[in-house]
Length: 374
Image 1: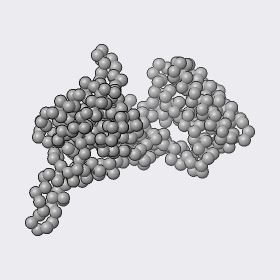
Image 2: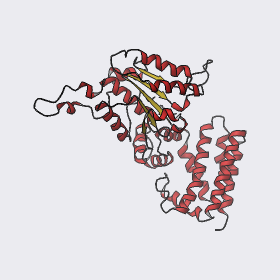
Image 3: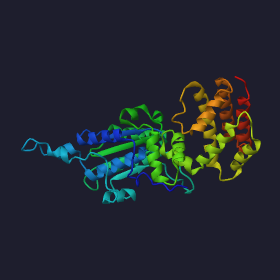
Image 4: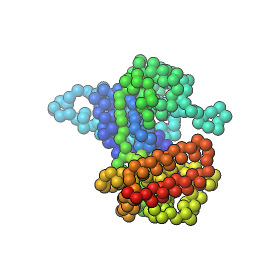
């Protein structure tokens, strides 16, 4: 397993310079909204950005405009030259170390709690946790600056918790800021969204994913980096999950089986499916299902668009193989196979079906379509 840093410990963020600049500009001009909704798909750096901004605020204190002592005697604006132009804070600073250790009095993080028996993470953020924000904000900041609240993830709040947060947003205390992290902002109350400044983070570009993967997994080859970046859907978190679950080997072996279609190497298929009979194969199974579904979708994409697979993480020979498969049957047949297999995978999850047999059935469905004459 890859040993990952919690966002409060991670000072490294790539690919979100525009979002950082919005936060810096708001602070610089003294127009820092009391609540920000940081949204985007999971694993792209939303929490990392929130903690970076928390470190920044707790280090630099009041908005720059309130520190302004007026124009320079000589007409030059020396104050602006002193303003920070990034959210970077030395990770060895006292404040950064305290935040990393979850020990800063002016930073409160609201997350799902642990069950009473200590065995599992609770399903929701409770109303009691949200009400504690009001108590925190009623206190004077311990160090005379800002009080920062991070809610991760906001859609985990139950109805009562969401209503409690709404009341806090309606009457925000001075020198307090709430950073809501959301993977699915549409699930939040419209009134909560309307009271927040929106900050949507885009998916990371493949080249950014590769830069980050090199830091976490320096042993990977360029081909493996390219493969993971293509499968990641713009999420470094997802790319690391794929690496953890053996995604590189699963993709290679699955495509090797598909490349032979319409011939079907049953022995190779059984060898591939056998790995899902182990008790510790849950992550590998989810990854294999994702790759199999994606492979079928990409066959359809290949038939519909020239160079449609350019950024999908395939090697040249793999693109050639998928393009060949797209010509063996009408696109509608491949779409039907995609729907059939996805329904099969869903039943396997809900009914606890034999995963090996499910994967063999899915591969057989694909092979049968490849035998269809266009």
